[in-house]
Amino acid sequence: MQTEELEPKLNKRERYKARLRPIDYFKDFENIDFENLGEGDRLFLQDFGIFTTDFLEDEFTIRLRIAAGMLTHEQFSYIADVVEEYDLTVITTARGGLQIHGVDEENVLEIWKKFNMHGLTTWQSFGDNIRNIVTDAFDGRGVYCEIETYPIIMQMQEYIIKNPRYVGMLPRRVSIGISGNSASVTSFFANDLYFALAKKDGVYGFNVYMGGKNTEIAQDTDIFLLQSEVFDFFKAFTEAFYLHGSRFSRSKTRLFYLIEDIGLEHLKAHIEKEYGKPFESGGELQLDKKLFSPNEKLKDGTYSYCYQTDFARLSVKEMKDISKFASENNVEIRIGVDQNIYLLGLPDASTPFASPKESSTIIACAGNLCPYSFWSIKNETQYLPLSKIAEHGITVGFSGCIKGCGRHRHTDIGLVGLKTNNFGDTDGGARVFIGAVHTTGQSIGRMLFSMVPLVHLHKTLEVIIEIYEQSGYKNFEEFSEAILNKFSEEFLALWVLANLQTGKALKLEPTSSGFEYEKNLLKTNFGDVDFLEPIDEEFSHSVSALAKKLWTVAGEDPTYKPKINRVNFR
Image (cartoon, rainbow, N blue to C red; front, side, top):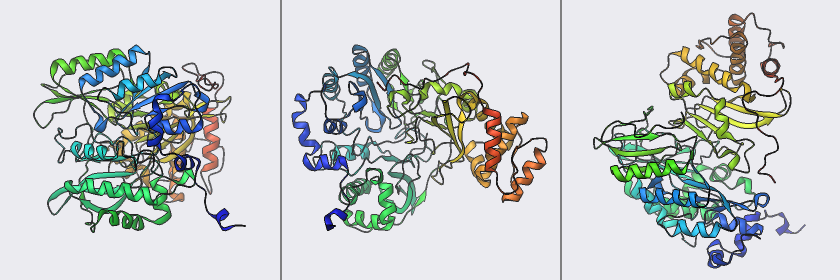
């Protein structure tokens, strides 16, 4: 066998880039035949904010890149006008941007031009690029803000946008978060690169975390940066990843896998070489847990209002109402990474217009607007105990597939919508995760149930929350750290099932640990429950048996039955 045959081969996307750089593909953008796209076209178009697939080739999605989620009311109103003119669908994203769905092939170039010629940009919002750089919705204005990050974000964005070296040319996408707040609306540890507020020698700056993704926590690199050093570090990081990131197996090209392959210290050495000077060791992380209210008082004495979207969906009327209000009252519009709209600068703690949903702590992926999702995730939120979730400020991430765009492992309760025939006819269900300590990036959620039929999801989550209510902890994350994470996943699953079986919600309070202790807890508290399988050596068989006993579905779900044959796959 020849030596070259033993060497890893470039993945398909890299082979296209080796033949034609995306920036050179753009030179002929005006002449693209959107009705007859090849595989290479579909890949290159992502670098300019246009997404389609070979099995949905006549439907397009356009994603707007909105730095720090900040929009003028004129821009917001203009987007609404375009959405209305072409009868499109718009949703907010978990990266503080807007995604436009339902674009027809004959209109895609025209709509793309309208956005990019009106002070907006779609560049590098998909594909192998540094994606929209995110921060907290209260950046620069909230009482917890020590460093305003928007100027840094604009420096970073201007450096990479339309830069021929980087447009579509990174080994894989890179998500970046930066927050100068000591308390943020949501966690940023799911990012490949996260600059978190820290303090060293009495000076505020940023600790650097790397290698996060939707299903993993970013690692502490033990690097502290002053505000003035972040941009230079960003440039060094980008070049190091460009030079040293893997371009072979597509499933192993994220930064997480580079760290897994060469080690964090080796990656830091690559970045330090580009940075040009030694790194300072990390400072003290400045992050506290806070449950934010719909109205928050800002630094300047004005107030904010969080307009809760319909699980990221926005109507044209809503957008126009928000734009008009912002214009008439001189308030600022921001899109939060929690998929909600923030209005900043209100004279008092008022509610300009009521939100349509209880969604402020729930992140829901695009659902049936995405070809990878099994179900209409935004509709399936009806299976959640929304009032209890809102009452306790419990964060929920709901993903439509294991890719995890709902960040289900970085929230108090995580859900993945899948399909199952474990409990009868093939139907919708959700994988359930709990226990993440996400505010400070200590741990991701653990899987509690591999599948709960949707018709049983409401009651199952309600029981979990009722058990939390018995604990006395002030928020679910503290409960997870102090209680849930002291027990094994199998025990917790059986504990919840036993409470479901008996109609109870018994308090959990660990005084010891280990299998025998957990087994005695079950026998002491649920002596009347037939676990169907012996639990002398393990819990898993009993979990499976009791789940099937409780959740086998007879007949159709009277509330909502997702269609198995999705009309999108035509």
